[in-house]
Image (cartoon, rainbow, N blue to C red; front, side, top):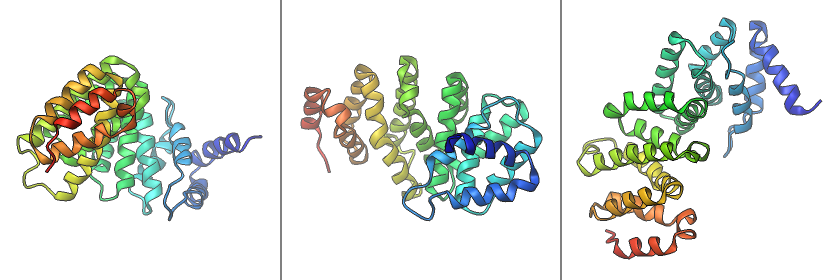
Length: 262
């Protein structure tokens, strides 16, 4: 029996038996890879996949809810991803709870938990992009900087960018966020929150542009003309990504030549 298959069987047995929950928690902690530079992403994804189903028992759901507020970063990291995996299969009540979990995770002080929120949104998009579209449309108008970062990070996911409509939606959302920066939406905000959003934009736009070059380079060109030092740094970072510089060297050189960096 492969290690992966054995792990799946352990998950099923442990999740459905409250007496086994401490064993599961111990297993997750021992194999988390933390403290360390890299969490065990495969283990977290394997756990989350158990919740991509309509037939999630009340016991399994109770475990997930208990982990959302658990001490220790890794259990929360796993639970947030699992919430996202379950969203497309959940009833209305559970969906509302998942939405609140994802919102809280987007704003968490820990970057791993914020990353779990983006991964959870990606799971929703992979299951049904219309659901992700509806969620983000409901949130984007009043979204803060950390939430905006989660949106672009979620959409900068290659499996979602195989569909042209998805890419155009991502570009439209990114344009709204960058326009907000230009029009002062970030004024008075926590500098660390702006840094986090900027880091997300500094790579995501290149993914969108690589998937839909005409619309993507049109956005980068418009932003390059803004004269805003913060936005110019975002543009320059994206133009430096090999996914653009190697495939579209002439376009990149032209835009780079026109940048006036501060």
